[in-house]
Structure formats: C-alpha cells, structure tokens
Amino acid sequence: MCGRPLGLQFHHASGDLYVADEYLGLLRAPARGGLAEVVTTETAGVPFNFLNGLDVDQRTGDVYFTDSSSTYRQQQHPSDQISAPQRATVVCQRRRCGERIFSGDGE
Image 1 (tube, rainbow, N blue to C red):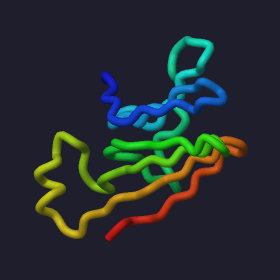
Image 2 (cartoon, rainbow, N blue to C red):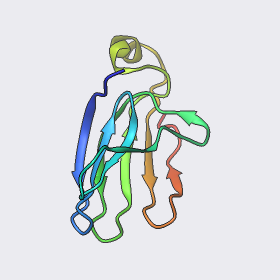
Image 3 (spheres, rainbow, N blue to C red):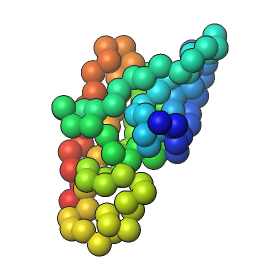
Image 4 (cartoon, helix red, strand yellow):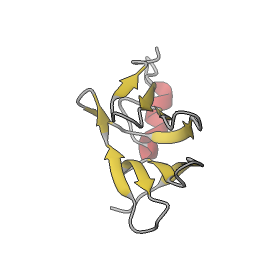
C-alpha cells in the first residue's frame, strides 16, 4: 500500500523529518538520508485511522499529531461526518523515551 502523507514537520536540531501518514502512521526520515522508519502505528493498542497533522516541539523534540477519526479512514470521510459522536485524538510521541501520551477521544 502506498502512503498518503498529510502532515510534515522538521525537528531543526536533529534535521529529522516527521511525517503523519494516513495509511502508514507516524514516520521519521533521518537527516542523514535513507528510508523513513515507522515510529508508531497505534496508541494504547488502538491502530490509527486518519493521521493528518503534526507539529514538533523544537525545544524538546516531542511530536504532537492528530488522528481525526477513531472509526473511519479518509476514503470513508462522508460516513464519519454523519456518524455520531465524532472522535478525534491528539497524541504526543516523546522523543527521549518513546512514550506516547494522548488526549483520549474528543467527543
């Protein structure tokens, strides 16, 4: 399956590029080049469905990203708009320890 990158952000200190990909999860392309590696595809045992935005805290290197739907993928977007409740998650991938924290379902 091809990827669909919907969010990109550099960590300036390391030069790494982080990618929020709808299909492949959170990826990191190292500054030295080479293939991007998967950082995570799930949190708390729940796989991501629709990653679409991210930001990197330039001071700490923590990566914040969103999973816009806990139920549907992007190609099922109209279904997500008419279903209730809307569920979105904000996740933080901590750079130093690899721990993920999340806000839970945004209802």
